[in-house]
Length: 479
Ligand code: AMP
Ligand code: ZN
Image 1 (cartoon, helix red, strand yellow):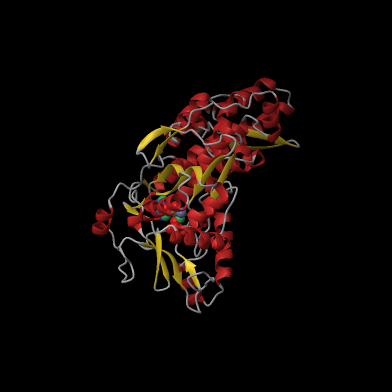
Image 2 (tube, helix red, strand yellow):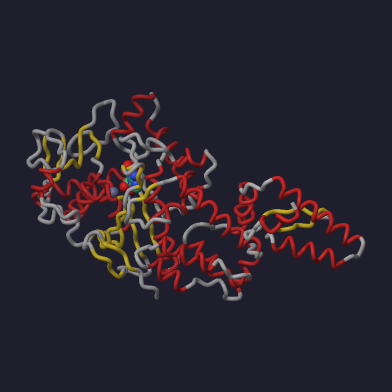
């Protein structure tokens, strides 16, 4: 079995990944708060953990991986949006979830196996909070329930800080009812205008952190394999999740491997709504940047490093992808060919590609290997390349290949003189064939081949497109 190695934030080391149960590998990733379109930064963890999900499915089998990603649909930002627009909260969250699905699907990401909404798990959250109070890890004060950080000795272990460091470094919300300034909210009271649920502490709503602890417990158990999210969540969100889960379920380990993606940046600063330096995934799609190009750019940087979105990267990604799809298309990688290759046992993963990717998701290295694999010149020879594209999520549906490759034709600027020369050559070929002058017809064909021109003959009508090795300079002499 392939060895996957992952950088575990918890131990700060790259470790061999050994699942608790290879029959059911379990991963939880913190999802979005749903009140607005996802910006490009929000898409980074989605793409990163999608690649990990695909890799796990490849190694352990598609039916042996459970991926959970939540929707935070109770939050003060959502309440504020509803108040500002006069719209119903459920309308806003439903609409935002639909947008999210559409935008993330455009990036070629698979839906997780479960996408729990926080509002559907209020009862388990209330039960967990009550349990924490009963065990002395939480206390009620002025209608709030707070987690007592001093009751959990390992608080701060994930981010490597002591409680005193945190108090010194953080913008702590000071509240008179907190015993320690780092204590965080598990439950807070709601007024009549704010969504609320009945609880032992009155009508109220949960704090943010408790939802991930409660939902991961319900869906994945007290111990599971991987927990992911952006590194902006490491503190306080993940630190708080660990504290809650470890204290409520001391019998379990909670998450064993923690993975954090670095931030997507604009001009060296984290892209975020609060800084206002963001654009949405939808903005890019609407500008005509295809989802697979956005995905390709993201995979070009290791998830553990900050990445910049730049126009140069977009253009390079576009050119490479079109070439790759073109190679597969021109070598007949149709759905039938894929099915036949599978049947013949030739639909195989390249072991070097897999080894690189399994080494802490080295997507950049994996793509370098794809450049080599793309040099094969038969459908069977290209199978490992095609399988690699699938694992990176750059194609899922082989019926889409002609369209993906075809974008190259539309998007690659062909100068007018080239079209003129090629059309003249096609006419010449036609005339030669009609006159049974096969020597001339073959000569023309060779010339077109050398220039990488792809000719399609339909009902006696020839048309042409630039192929993957298109080189108009070979036609210069005929200009
Ligand atoms: P939020 O809706 O802000 O809670 O964020 C949802 C997910 O997007 C979390 O996993 C965040 O860590 C992640 N995220 C937010 N901003 C960025 C960014 N600029 N780059 C990468 N990930 C981000
Ligand atoms: Zn979370």
